[in-house]
Length: 193
Ligand code: HEC
Image (tube, rainbow, N blue to C red; front, side, top):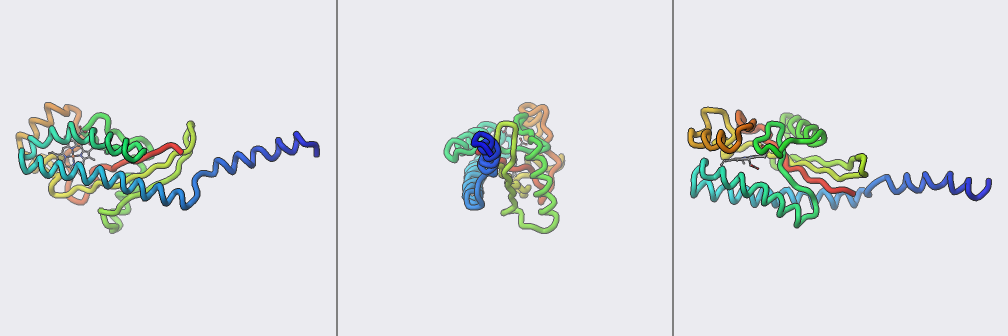
């Protein structure tokens, strides 16, 4: 076989090797980092929400969610090097629409929750191929707790002042009607590889 033919035959295999993606160790490290990033968002936002609920009540705390949730997500993204955000199939923030991977991830997490897994540690991840290359994707479930109900529960659970604020600030709101134990949404974490 002449040399160019040999190179032509070998090259695709070399590239296939490159495209096979991160090793198991690299993936485990990314999962640990993604867990840290989603945990940081949940802790910071949860803390500020608790404080605001105590100081201003649920209708006053809506402003905190509106302004601080996207800011905290942006801060955590910057610090972690991932793109970190919250999404939900029944989104309140118009920017919170899940993409296909996120929707599927949440559906899978809901099934695992229904099968008896603990909500606190419910997460999933995958390395996916896209038209622009490989991506690391991670999702952590955000289960509904009693504290969420005054802003995300059914009509009877939401005080009138909150209803009025939500109608004014989020006219396209879909994020009500939840009960304890449901999955409100996910923290979505991703990074190109
Ligand atoms: C004080 C009212 C309030 C409480 C309590 C509250 N939320 Fe929200 N939630 C909001 C508002 C307002 C938004 C929209 C924030 C924005 O504009 O980004 C929101 C958005 C979200 C989103 C982003 C997806 C979307 O629908 O836009 C998730 C996920 C979420 N909330 C989960 C929860 C969970 C879980 C709890 C309980 C631990 C909770 N929330 C408690 C008011 C509240």
